[in-house]
Picture: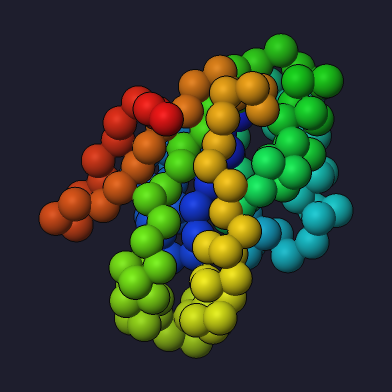
Length: 147
């Protein structure tokens, strides 16, 4: 079992990456879908209880944001905690976001605000593995984390 935490600004490819790489093996936990922290917590608890791997698909820009998940996971279950950091270039995210419609389109100020508080992940947060993801030629490229 593993718990995966995505980290990256809006429109950096997180949900598309989930669909491409984890939709057949991991439960998708996203505030965009669940709408409330209570529902999110209940889904996480159920995954931990049933030993079902899951992906937390939120921006998770700060160490504090990620700590609430890592602390809970490590306290309840001994499982691998993996971070995927998505390259966060504001210009590219704004461009991708401009192609979205309706509620899927995030106000530009929201993307910029998330970027301004982004803290790079580090192993001592409790991650067992960290990967770096970027989009090149409309394909995801995954690399081991190097900082």
